[in-house]
Length: 275
Image (cartoon, rainbow, N blue to C red; front, side):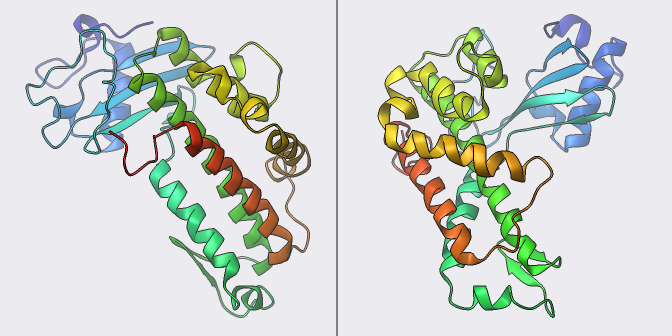
């Protein structure tokens, strides 16, 4: 069900012209976005999943207040734009947006640096004081912090792949409704099944089949497949690393660093020199 500005826009008295639009604009209001900057809402209700497309404009972007006629994002995404999109649950009343990927990459680099600090392994041997991490203080059992760091790192690289693919598609003016749906649900793309397949082969192939990890870095792809089978699937399905040491997890972060290098070899999404 596409967004209909005649039926689903707020009325002048601050109400809503239809019951279905009420939830949409509640999601916007609760997100803290300035309503004057919300230009488009796209809602698709299917199998009790609500997909919300949000846009907030700042810093004079599209200063005339207009959006592209087809509702697409421009090829060049300036740093002044905050872009929200993602699913939402009608039953539970929560919505989602993409992880802040710039922060995610910074966090990964900070974790790598932390793992190299001589005193960090010492801190994991005692439960007498909390452990300071980038952006938070860990007050749980010291050895469990390494599982948390690894989970965050994996979530981060998967989020960055999705953003990199979307950036390249728009920068090359290749974005289509079909590709947009694939970005929203990479597991629905035809081909071999599996999380690693979806993020490292199917999504990059939307831009260029030569960018697939199995094509561009076949040896790395073999290791990533095993990593997802032996590590990723366990730490996201009820398990944690058992009495890990810093030496145990350093190679895992090194592998993820290699995946980031592959990502940067074909995408300018995270390049400081990007147009």
